[in-house]
Amino acid sequence: MNAEDLLRLTRKREEPANTDAATNTEDVITLLQAQAREGRFAIYASATHGMTSIMVHAVLVKTEKLSGDLARIVDWEGNPYDHPGCGLVTSGSKEAWVEMTHPWLERQPEPLHGATQLVFGRSFDARLGDRSYFELSHELTLAHGLHWLEEKHGWCRYDEAGEVAVLAGVERAGNDDHGASATLVWVDFDLLQRHMSASGTSLVQMFDANPVPASLPVAGNSEGDQVVDSTTGLIFRWGMSGAGSYARGVRIISPNQTAHERGQSEASVEDAPKEYETFVIHDWKNNVVVECSASPDAQASYFEKDSPLPFQTSPVFFRADVLDRYKADPDKYQLHHRSITCRNAWSLQTYDFNPAGQVHTYIRYLGYLPFSEQRYWRSFNEAPKGTISDRSFKTDFEGSWDVNPDSLDALKSTLRELGSANLSWFQLKQPSLIERLHYPLTASTKIWDDTLIDMNKVINEGLVKDELKRIGIAAGGKSDPTMGSIKWLREALIAKGTDVDHADDLIKPLGELQFLRTRFSAHAGGAGAAEERRKLLKEHGSPREHIDSLAGRLVAALTDVLAILSA
Image (tube, helix red, strand yellow):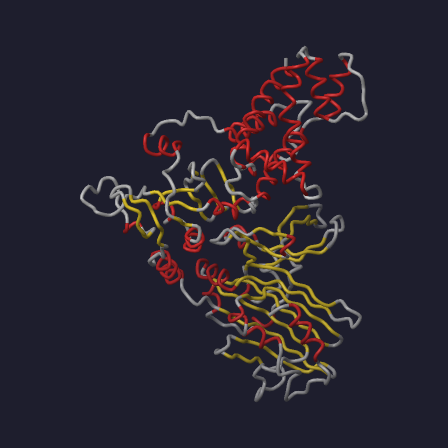
């Protein structure tokens, strides 16, 4: 069911219903009965067009309350705009008190007393945009980790792949020149089933339809009779109203599993055999390059002395562009120092890159990834072109600290220090950019260019020109409207007692970064950019080595600048 379905039903009626038949062969009851197949349930639906109207409102009721006399359940009252209240009550004897009101304790037939309302319609004139909106019961949102996302028009959470899954939503349609409109609030069927199993409740979908839905079993029943259809869970009354007809009742949907059955079902899925991909590894125990499954059963630990299987720490090597997917989507993936995290879905505990430009990790950690992610890594898998990095060998096997500095990591640390120091001359405008700074490991010019652009944004665009200008002019510097923040940094350093040559050396890597950012920008490019790249590759050998060199010089310069301007 969707809002357009409801709108179509209200527009479809052309002839008044009579006592023997209904409006259409397709109607709201048909839609309600198809919900399980479609994977979502309506907890509120409303549609109107002329004399035709449809309303559905669902609540949760303890299942044991639905096993007794349900004769009056069709006399339900209310809608999502009913909600608990806290008000002042006074009497003629000057007594006064405050009390709570509960819509599902008052005016309702006994089986619905204490029902859990799932959706609340609200309105507030101070809101920007739509003044009317819906909220889900916190019993649903908190229990199932749902959060409202405006751009999705629904309540969402991350799925097992780290993608945003919409598990409840709001749809609207109509309000056109013909006067038809429809609103639907829905919840994922499986989530609702899980909730009902855990809470011992059933869903009661109350409905009010005018005219009578075609699929209601009214044949053989007199107008005003209460009809109970145990096969469909329908309990309703129907009748005539002027030239039309109406039906009012409920549809009861019980969970398809008890709490125990649901738990057993979910546990069996958790315990089901996991799929594992096969990788080309360096089996250094047996000194061969072989294929090995990422399954723990295909590997041996150090303590299994007599096992012929490769060690769990056998390295696996990949083309460097395996990381491009993660660098391209920083909102979903976080590349930490030698590890990768995909939101709350999965993580790769360690990776590194060797002098041959290959990314490497260990076979045991690939087995922790979802199978789809293992397949992605497999597509970049290749035989080793060298050994693992010295850094990995020292930290992972010798258990010692890596004493060789990593210039880009050092630059990130320096930038975090600058950003948290509350400096008047530097502001970290986009802290998230720091985590997007990664070595370009391939020959891709785009990744190289993007790294330089992000470095420039976080460093040079963080310089506060007005403050540097103030420092420089206060010491006798001359104001020049053509000077940018880097040149005013030079003047500020000189104003603080730095000799001219040293000031020039300190701003040199910042100027180089600004020059490269401009030369490699999308609107520049051309022969000049290509020639500059050739020069850098000739000097440094690779984009990674260039970034490493530039980052090291930036760290040295920013460290001295901080010391000088803070003195």
